[in-house]
Image (cartoon, rainbow, N blue to C red):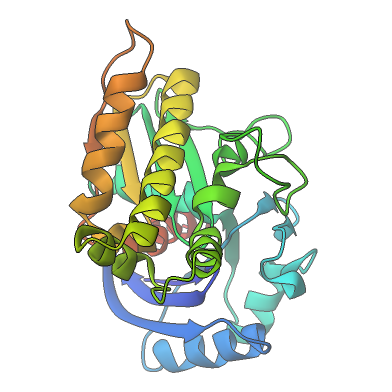
Length: 293
């Protein structure tokens, strides 16, 4: 059994995972006392259980050897440079592995989830930001400096848009991350602030919501096209909190990709996890078990 902690953009998800199945889960809203709240919730979660290791996911670039989050712009600043392996050892008495959240989600879905057994796959996790990851011929893509595959949310999709918080221009995340969608809805004077509500409002004739929805779909689709052009996957996995909207997101994104892919490119299978909120936790369990078995 593994204790898994996912430091997401708007909430911290925790799970006690045994052989791929979440035995217990908990959620902590993101706030000023993130580390203390996460530690307290994790201790309560595993009370009476005996986890062998911990897996910790963060939304930015990871120094895996140092057990640290290198940087995630505007997300969990207290985690920047913090030795999370030492934090887990001091807080829970457990050895730990630290990984980027999208990579962990991809591991979870290709190991025991919606793309189990896939050896060539890409994942987009749509939430507060846009996370991506890739696996090629069964190998998780990392690159020489651990940046490879995970910055798909910072591909430029609009050269005329403003600066993203990362410093690049017109990133997909700055157009269609949940934080950007809420910003654009507010700018249009729409009372809707939740992404799922936006889809419902757009379907009911709310033109402001429909305009923001359509722009987000194009940004998600363009990002997926670029991932397919770069990595040539058999499977595209769509996960993250936005996917609670289900087919309202998946169907138009898949249609956009099929229309805009390079002519001879393979048209990959699209899949959405049955529990997108558990993708990262399941992957962390696999990574923690493999590292500390």
